[in-house]
Amino acid sequence: MKVVLEHLTKKFPNRNKKIKEDVVAVSDFTFEIPDGKLIGLLGPSGCGKSTTLNLISGLEAPTSGRIYFGEEDVTDISPENRDIGLVFQNYALYPHLTVEQNIIFPLQNLKGDKKMTKQQMKEKALETAKLVQIDPYMSRKPSELSGGQQQRVAIARALVKLPKVLLLDEPLSNLDARLRLQTREEIRRIQRETGITTIFVTHDQEEAMSISDEIVVMKDGLLQQIGKPQAVYDHPVNMFVAKFLGTPPINIFRGEIKSKQLYIGDDRICETDHGDMQVYVGIRPEGVILKKGGSLVCRLNRVEVMGRDTSACCSNDNAVSESIRFIIPSDEMTGDEGDLVAFDIKPSKLHLFDAETENVII
Image 1: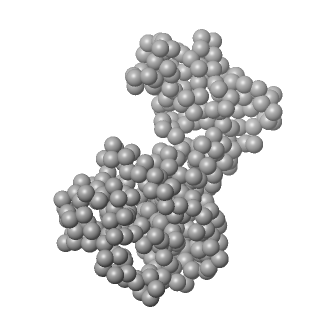
Image 2: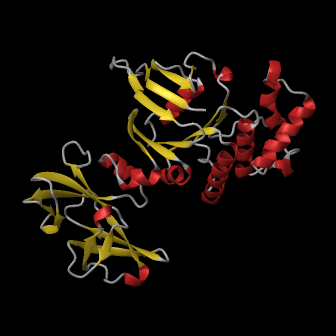
Image 3: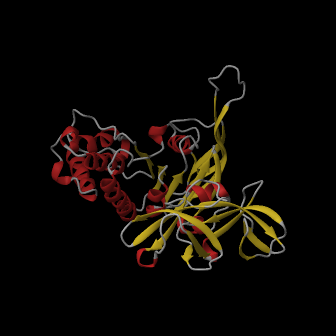
């Protein structure tokens, strides 16, 4: 099911009585979610991603704009009639019901041609439980399950009636690191097997990039960039997107273009076609080569061994932050703490941003 958002805006009354302007949670959001795709809504806390999900589900009514499922305008349709599946961060399972009863619950509300017999509901619940690999625990109560198992029950309950759209609101936040990795792989597998259009809200950029067909990066209610995860990572439209994606984060330096040459301080980094201007220079941690006589000189503060790779924690007077990190293969790392070390920059890992607008320089 294709989902189309047209100029979607949501405003809330400001609780600060001294400020008359409303709080804009989502601002003029326009986006088309293709049928059968998994889309990641990504951004920091307060950026409007959960509000967007609530608007799609019908839990919130938009201040302006329209929402379409396929060709149908669902803006004014109640949540129960939108044929959606919704998975919350806190699972929201009924503690007094078994796993089977939790999964069956949405089927009990079906009416008309969709109404099922008790046997049909049990069969459908078992089929869905097998899909999320929770079928051995059908007679257990939620309190008898691990966090990962409870999340699978919540997903099964959302999937059991084969909704047109599956909405996941930070479903992995309450899981430990290993369970999060396992469960996000399961979500991707289930989505591919069912082909249900899925919208996945998260603030974890690694989570979104690993399972999404496309990611939508948001900031302060505004859409920043849409695209395939690797494309957005490689070609950010502004410094916010560049800084938000990537672990460790991108290193930002104050730079200058003079006579077709890019400088960071006194270090000449490379040639460029741009005219003279002040810029921010973004260099991905993996975007350097340790090389004697390299173009960028930094002071090595400490070395963190990560196994295959080494994290060189450095400082540079022109860096925006006190500490910068570069990832170097462990067998290539040389130098002691306090030494000056030099790096060459990989062109594909270097990004230039306008010093005033912070937009990428094309």
